[in-house]
Image 1 (cartoon, helix red, strand yellow):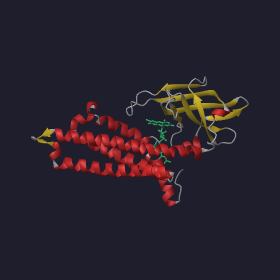
Image 2 (cartoon, rainbow, N blue to C red; image 1 turned 90 degrees about the horizontal axis):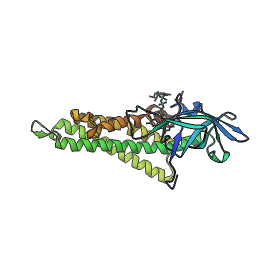
Image 3 (tube, rainbow, N blue to C red; image 1 turned 180 degrees about the vertical axis):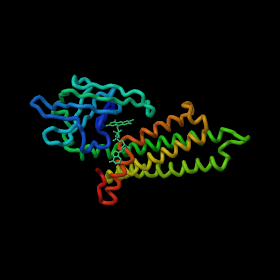
Image 4 (cartoon, rainbow, N blue to C red; image 1 turned 60 degrees about the vertical axis):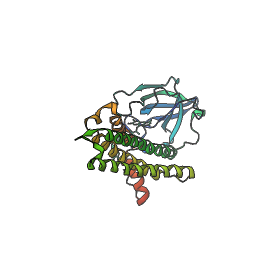
Length: 268
Ligand SMILES: Cc1cc2nc3c(=O)[nH]c(=O)nc-3n(C[C@H](O)[C@H](O)[C@H](O)COP(=O)(O)OP(=O)(O)OC[C@H]3O[C@@H](n4cnc5c(N)ncnc54)[C@H](O)[C@@H]3O)c2cc1C
């Protein structure tokens, strides 16, 4: 995968278990003399329909801990169905994976993943990435809106010359600048090796919340054209919804930050 020769996917979420993955995974693994047997389903797994391999997180029936496995696409116990009818991130293929007595060798068990704490280390990195993704989505919407409002004329003038339109643009740019600054610092902290879960969660919450506001203003200043796909902003509006919910919802990431700043865990 590091050589970009194989495509991977990350299989954590399940049809009935999303936010509660830390304590509630129902996909199971069981050690046998032949290897590990995996059973259950994973939902929403990005790239799963064409990935060469998928990392499956499963609960060990013997010790109750979450373990990670490399499952290759030609494994006879593995099958995947494309999730249809998405209104957001339509370019990304998400899959519903079924594992039926799926046999995986001990060699394909992630040797350093021994509990959900190890899974969470991956989420720390991917959440930071989603904060960047939100920033890109917001920037695309802002730039499209700025361009449109400078060209679109009403009352004989570009709408960008109206005070209330400028108010929207400035609010968008203020939030965008704060987001860009935050994600830049996040990457610096990642490089310095000091990035913690709460930092990634804080950025994920802030950037995805602000993105929702920015894409909504972008759509607003474009009037009716804002809902047409050809002007791009409608796509950003839809994508912002998916980005807002995956890699931990606003609530779950807020609970991670809340626990860190108060010292009290409010997880149920
Ligand atoms: C486009 C897309 C791509 C994805 N890609 C992947 C992927 O590649 N791999 C993967 O493993 N998963 C993936 N996911 C799954 C994603 O991470 C989950 O959708 C997300 O974690 C939320 O889980 P859920 O959808 O089951 O919602 P639920 O957990 O059912 O949550 C529903 C609502 O209840 C709220 N809620 C839940 N618990 C609490 C609580 N304790 N307190 C307050 N509110 C709470 C949530 O915040 C949310 O608002 C993807 C999802 C999408 C939409």
